[in-house]
Each structure stands twice: as C-alpha cells, then as structure tokens.
Length: 251
Image 1: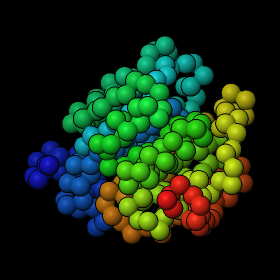
Image 2 (image 1 turned 180 degrees about the horizontal axis):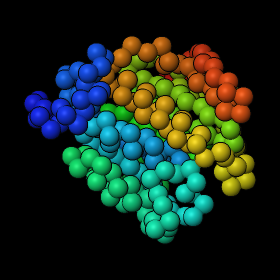
Image 3 (image 1 turned 120 degrees about the vertical axis):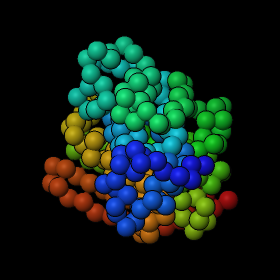
Image 4 (image 1 turned 90 degrees about the vertical axis):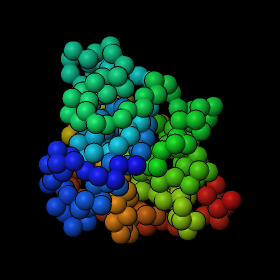
C-alpha cells in the first residue's frame, strides 16, 4: 500500500486532490485500488482512459478482440494504425504513456464461467463494458458470489443505461432483479441496431465517475437504481427497482 505521495504525484493529481471529497487520503485510496474492466470497446476505452488519468493503482482489462476499422468512430483509444491489433495491448501501450505508474493486468480472453473466478477475484471493483447480456449476467452472478462492487453500462442507438451495485450490502438488488426475462443481444448489437459515437464516451465516463465515488465511499443513493438516458431527446431519469425474493442475489 502506498502511504506517501511524492511531490510529482501530488502535482499530477492536484486538480482532484483539491476536492474536499478526495484530498490526500482519497488519492491514496485511488492509487491503492484495483479495478477490472471487462470489455475494451466503446465503454471500456473511456473508462480505462479516465481511471488511469485519475491514478487507479492496478487496472485489469479483459477482452479477446482485435481492433477493426468500424470500431474507431466510437472507441476513443484506437486509431487507424491499430487495426488488426489486440485491443488490450493497444490500450495498455497508450495509457502507459499517459500514466506510467499504472500497473496493468491484461486478460486476452473471453470471460466465461470457466475463467471468471480467476479473473475477478483479486479486484475490488468490476466494471462492465461488454456488448452482450450473457457477459453482464455472468459478471452479476459472480460479483454477488464474491461480494464485489459492480458498475454496468449498456449503449445502443441514442440510448444509454448505467447500473451500480454493491454486493457487500445484502439489501441491494442485482441486474436480474431488474430484467423480467433475458433481453436479446440484438438490443446491443451496434452492427444491426447502430449507435451514435459520442454516446459511448458519455456513458463510459459516467461509469468511471461511479467507480471513483465507490472507491472514495462518497455517499450515493444510486445503488438499486438504473440511470436511463436518451440523447435524442436529452431525457435523463433514475428509476428505483426492488430486490426479488426468488433472485440469485437473495439466495
């Protein structure tokens, strides 16, 4: 654990250290935190970018995909020279230039039930940047099992959703409590449904703020709610939902 901040570290993070909710003690908490991002695409890029700039000590990134030309309009850490390269390696190389002190743990694999325990067990907070509900529900299930904090994002067309869960609190509902049935992955399919590019950056950055608030234990009434955003109408609303008695989080 890092207990002393050098002059250079204080200067690097000075604009957030001055916030009364952070300060020197809060910055130490950020530097000593371990965060895993699952999915290195439209959501994962801005999440990784801003968490590394904030000073997250250990950043895990899990994704098996390579950069394609169609990714670039919404996946902010990639450019044309990255096409054909593994996303996790590209992100690490770019973010190391931004913040050399970050420790990266890369998982160049698809997260599944066979490897998820090994991948998530050593992280404090799990951030979902995946593009399918199978992965989101898997992260939900195992975050409950290991009592992790979980921040979930979803984007499609002009719409964005964000969930925030703290499974140390047994009163918290989970993702399964919200969905009456498993949604079709076509809902999140950018190839068929389409997406406006800046949406990914906005939703991903909301997720990164939720991560930092969670690390800093900033009082938040967002747990057990969904933030629903439509950027065509610029309509934002938070909706509360309750824990189900027969849900996986109630067992």
